[in-house]
Image (cartoon, rainbow, N blue to C red; front, side, top):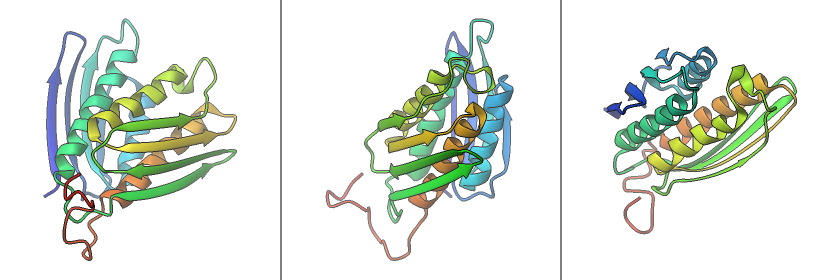
Length: 193
């Protein structure tokens, strides 16, 4: 079973998250941020990952700590579920259009966390979330999961652009962590990710 469960409590947030990489896309998401719930539900559905997220945070301040910490916890859980990476495809990419928006994502689930994010949201951001927090979420996820990601998003509608990015990331992730029966070892010349 490629599953993981992570619990994290700080003075700013409490997050309980579980996932199954070999799921059906079922999601139970409760972050206190409706638009972010929608994005994580799309992430689970299009990544075929069973995902449960229950988070409480200092939303009276703003959404930053909650979104950042969910990225940290989701990245940590992904790293745990992937384990040593034996037999995974490792590299994958996906492009997802949504009306006028287009998101392209290329991933390396190779143990090195890095993010290149190209695209910009309006100052108000999608769903009332400041646009820079979307990039920061993916940064927190990637650095904690050991994933190198290149995300490019274009369009005019913040909602469409953001949702396309989450769906493209999920589809690329599903392909990258898929077990390939022809790969019997860790997909690296180093012998380890």
